[in-house]
Length: 159
Image 1: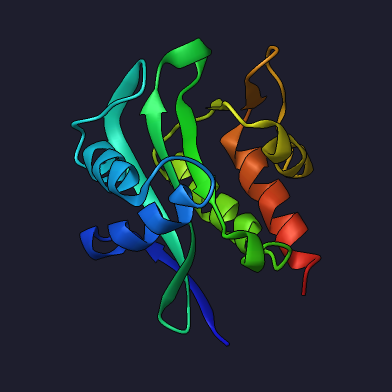
Image 2: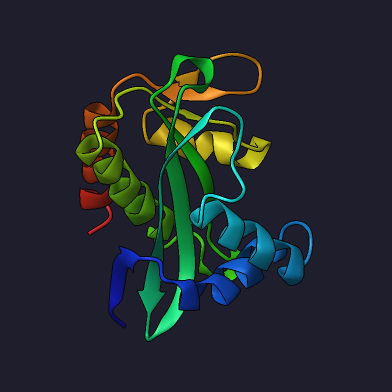
């Protein structure tokens, strides 16, 4: 099995929506939300226009995705919006590869301080990749270059 991480396309949105809907809401809801987010029609608070999404693809099937954007929220330069891997695919390093690619995008776009508003189960994942508590709800990477380095370290340890 070969896994690749690549930029998400419009054709990937239904698969992304299906993955996201496994945890909350419907595929129809997520199709509209993800499309709107990627086209700039749906924006989180204080989001800037620059945004992206990446998918993990294994055997021509989307097995996870991450999305993020530039922002001014909470004094951050970037925000990790979503990361999802289906339950049956977890524990194989997919989320780590997605975090690494998203961190590289933040570095490429000069977004230094990166925020994320995780649900409780995701807090462990983000801590493993170097995020710290910003407040009761939010976590932060103070330097996207360190976020990228940490992701590479963790992912290299999975070989």
